[in-house]
Image 1 (cartoon, rainbow, N blue to C red):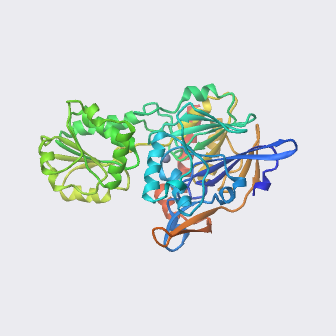
Image 2 (cartoon, helix red, strand yellow):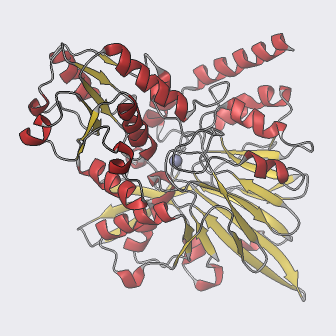
Length: 499
Ligand SMILES: [Zn+2]
């Protein structure tokens, strides 16, 4: 495959996360090819190495995970990338690392934020990877510029749902790419730096390509801001006049822990953290990262991490329960007169809804108030806004979405003056990114490496070609083509009317 990269320039290849329905398992390669004294030299970096959520759909018995196929880079030292950069700590961008290590592969040095490494350490220990097999790790922060031989990578902040979410500016001296990572433009993120619009504007004359997170573009306008989620929580709590409030949160989204906490604080309600092991693992990491709930609480509210009778008794029957849980512990003494539930995710808390119904306790959900769900991805308006920062329009290369979404958004994108890559990128294709035009260099079929564990310590991987239909069940739950197409048509009509 590397022989295909013979012309000089910067190459881009999605290794996972970009096909009809496989929108997770992210990994992207950038290779700069140059000639020095007549010899071809290639310098490669990878961005992210996630796991594919719906590995069962690939049809391998006893599969434990599926990950992008990066063997060509790591099987021998000749092709070993200079670095593996991590945008953030979510499993679909990070968890491939442990599976490759578990299968005995060596990985290039990792570059990631402090919080991302905290989550990774936890995984490495969970999978019992001996320390001597850990790759080198370099902690990076917003504003850092990492200089490799022929490439330079600048770290950009990204408004997403966890700490230390990054985008990257990738330069080879001729072409500049802004790889956004998962993000929206929201400037109201709490305890972390938002997407830096000023810096993007300052680089507008330089950036040729925006490799963008298009996960949320089937919604119009700007993505819901964190301050809107917070305000909605406060409003619901106040209006309910209930003493006891139950707010389950999605475990990997620390910003929801924080917003629920701040809403409780605003409403002068004590806080009880209550959840499963996963929840407390993440909570512990938020605290270790430097967030002090006690300091925020001051003497205004009490905070408890336990839920025994004595602890609850100290809460004056006036509290918010924050956590990942599907039951209401009897110790809380919840009934229809004193309690309300606020469900902040679409699917995870169905058993809890049943429990609330059983006790006649009223609850509201994301169906009633969509802004209750923290949004990590930009809507169409976010990308319209980014595009407006540029005079000379960059080319957008969409990632993190099904191919039909890219095909169907073309008319709308053209209408608003957004230049989309002419051919819709699919997993495993290789593109040469020239100054103004892209060239498709290779279109080999995409593969996944399916991981099977015989015993806890005996793992092996098997390659599976990606089928256009695999993962359909997963897709049905997230976004359907017909709905998507209808929405883009409606947004286009709206803009034509406004013009
Ligand atoms: Zn993410």
